[in-house]
Amino acid sequence: MTGRLSGKVTLVTGAGAGIGQGCALLFAEQGATVVGCDIDEGAAERTRKLAHDRGLDLDVLAPLDMTEPADADRFADEAYIRHGRVDVLVTAGAIAPHMAPAAAMDFDDQWTPTLRGEIDVVFLPVRAVWPHMEASGGGSIINFASVNAFRGSGTFGMVAHCAGKSAVLGLTRQLAVEGGPLGIRANTVSPGMVRTPATESAGAHDGAARDALLARIPLGRVGRPEDIAWCAVYLASDESGWVTGGNFPVDGGVLAK
Image (cartoon, rainbow, N blue to C red; front, side):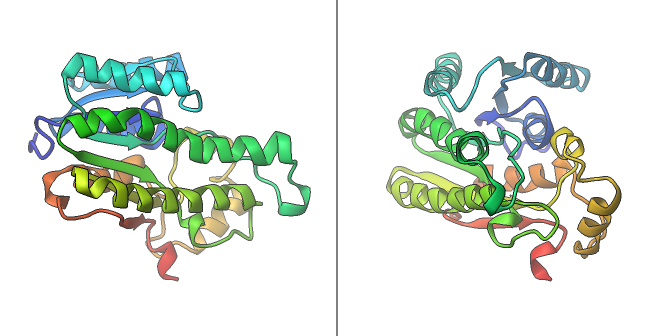
């Protein structure tokens, strides 16, 4: 271990799979004390086992739903009680967005739950952690936007997803302004297409959809969770101590085209 995150108590939402799991494991490898959460008990157990097999000390609390204020509060409070401080929050939890074009998107069954799953899962854990991070003398909040906050898709109907991820950018900039005087930094990472259980189940890595995605990635491959996690390590570390309100695309070059 390099110890880039030694001594830092880190909370990771969505630690049961995908980018959240990748961040939780890599942060632990880099010396952080990691407390994760997930809505899926089975996924949480798989992450615990992976950590154990790698000789890492990592716990994942489950089931906790980050769209529920009480669960977000429980997550933050439990971690603070256990460890006496909170230095980093990684809001990697997500709910699969509904894909439909604007004219066909149902307000109650598609638009509303998608925005709840894009924005509430960021705001609620941030709100819950904030007083603990302030009491700890500051810290780093790492949220996830997307390349789809900057560009639309000709392959999928992403109107709600694009709106939600754009909102995360604005939310995070405001957190940076409010948190600066308290020593709380806030930044976003904007991933391109990453191979996760969620994107696999959506069919993003099959057939014509896969070919269309690869055609617009200059580096010629989709991302892996660890590609995103390494950027998050930097934003959590003291190396980024003068970095706040920023956005970091990790996308294989998609936004360069």
